[in-house]
Image (cartoon, rainbow, N blue to C red; front, side, top):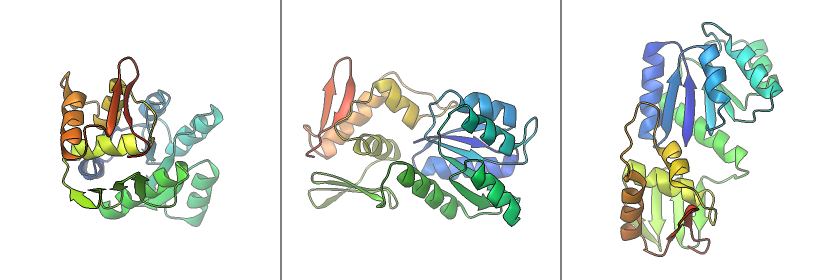
Length: 220
C-alpha cells in the first residue's frame, strides 16, 4: 500500500517509516501541515498517518480541509494529544482511528491493517482467491495448501493484486503501491517481480494484457 506519513519529529518519523516499509508499504514522509495537504490532494495514497501538532498548519485543520474537499483517503491520527476531547474532535473531523504517542510499532502496523480492511469492507485479514491465501496480518502466503516464501516486494505486489482480483492494475499503479518518493525504481522492476511470482505460484495465476496491465485470475 502507498502511505503518506505526516510527522515533524525526526526520530518518530524515521522509526515509523522504517517499520511500515518492513511491512511492505511504500511510505512518503512530509513534516508539516501545508506539505501534507498538498501531497494528500494528489489522490494516490491508500492511507494518511497524520500528526496533529504540525508546523505551518495544524493536523486537525488539514483533516477538516481534506474532508471538506471530498477527499476520502483513510486517516489514522498519531499524536501526543491524549485528552478525550481531542480524540472526539479528531474522529468527528473524519479520522478513521486515533493512536496516542508513544506507541508500539507493532500496534501502529496492526491499526494500519485494520483501517485498510474496514475501508475495503473486509472483516478478515486473509484474502482468499481460489486456492490462493494471502494473510495480510502475518504477511504469509499459501498456494494450494503450501506455504510460499516471498520477498517483501513480491508480497506487496501480490497483495495489491489479490485485494482486487480480476481488476487490471497498470505498471504505474503497481509502482505507486511498491515504491516511495526516495526509492529508485528500475524500469523493469514490476516485470521482474511478476516473473518471480509466476514461477513460485503458477504461470497462469497472473494475467497481462497490453495496454491494461496485470490482473490476478478470480478463480486462483
